[in-house]
Length: 463
Ligand code: SF4
Ligand code: SF4
Ligand code: SF4
Image (cartoon, rainbow, N blue to C red; front, side):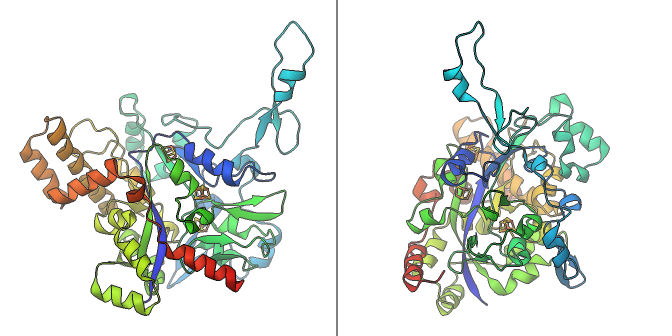
């Protein structure tokens, strides 16, 4: 067993307001720069929808992530034979039209226009060419258009549904949508790291944050092509690639990342997960249909004496172990099995997990409003069981709270739902508290060790 610690994340989708405060917080702190205008290291998509860049989930078009051939895993974007050719031209890279052409407005005209009969206007101006333009797309262009035939019906996840199921999903009386906030997943098997010909991308040993060394990046864009989540971006002004850095300067001073701190929905949780590095490869190359279970099986119990002893042998600091025991992510992912990885079939072993949306349900019997097949395409890697399990548990917790506060669900129904979800009263209460009452200190548990190690490395002059 090779015990490692990863700073991991959970986003609770039933709580997301779609307010984009997270995206704006990140933009203001990190990408309000020339060449980075079109980048949204954090973005929030409406689902069903096409997302940003458009249809990023369609790997037949973008060829991101890994594919399993026999016993080996290969990057879909490149192979030994294609690596040099792809350096100079990559046919599957997103174009600026797949993102959007960033623009501002001619605000100056509002102040400097000469006196005239009509009000002056502020025309949109391209931030790339500096010329007037007509905006035709944006990072959240399909915001709230969950039933739109232009956007929602082109969601790649709908391929998993039959024609009848699709029609049902878009029937006006059944229309439903939800928000999907996305950042880099700081994956355990990151395609971006493997694809970089310059060796400029690395995963920090102490906390698993994936970073691009700007001094080594040569702008080949292999990471942009290889990342199936399209969370590595090319800065056309600096000629280097950039991505979410999990706000590591804030982490190193014990603070939550900017987008986490800013989130008014309190959707986001941050904490340590312990895992067995020897199991990364089996988890990444598991059979389709057992990817979620394989990823879960590599997570280690920070309360288990054998794991504690092994963690000490592997150099995990006691403060990191303590943080793992208090980690809200460990609870949501490993203990409660409520949070699931996004598109595990991309085989990058993402370390950002989502509690799937139960959405406002019509009855208190646990039926999810969003099609389970659709949610399985997002979070199940082809296996409905973990998605159904999470939804059953969410429904049971909701019913038990309704019974306690509104009184319109009888105890027999609550007991049946809790039993179906393998959930005790105590666990339902703990889930309710973490979901609704948790303070910032409960939601963000950053071990102090990460700061100490960062300072040490700074003194050593290494990275
Ligand atoms: Fe790399 Fe993409 Fe995974 Fe982030 S999400 S670590 S950019 S492969
Ligand atoms: Fe941006 Fe920091 Fe959030 Fe990453 S963690 S998306 S860098 S604000
Ligand atoms: Fe708003 Fe938080 Fe949802 Fe971002 S994750 S859109 S900040 S509620």
